[in-house]
View (spheres, rainbow, N blue to C red):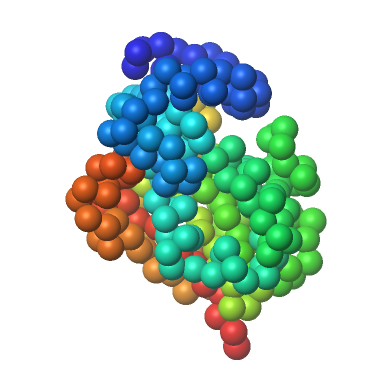
Length: 257
């Protein structure tokens, strides 16, 4: 199963994968129904989750119903339990919108919800994250998960995210990072897709983030909290929701001056 998922993830372009998943997902969810693991996003339970990974395949991480991964479910629990996202009127900007969230957020009456991406077939606005077509201070909440590792000039992208976030606003800027790596590594001379996948974890990643990622966000101007939200959950909840224990959420605020 691992080899099959890895083969198709690396073979099929992401935009086509998104379209195909809409067709396949209901059948897989029906086949894997059970009670052992629960996706907190939709409340559905399964006997197992699916494997996932472009280079290192992780077992039991992809929800058959929402196609959420560990990071998506952790983010959802944080939104639900710790923020006003589901109750207050908010202007939300969502980069590369994930299927797990897109339709749910679109239906929420309290949100003025805008999605953006250069390539996603479900994005409202086709835009370069390094040159956004939005005015300063336009959004109260920004979601940008696993995007910055694809961007050559991530400093410019972070500056743009800070610019369009309103004072008092929040940005959740998740990236893949290595907790035992102090300094982010990137090398533009590595161009072979297989070599990039081996070094950076995915063929279209341009760097491996270290723990200095949080410091860089702070240098841009954000007030940053590297939040281990799994500490608020029991071991039973972490296992049931198939979360990555100890994963840090980059919760970034733009202070009101």
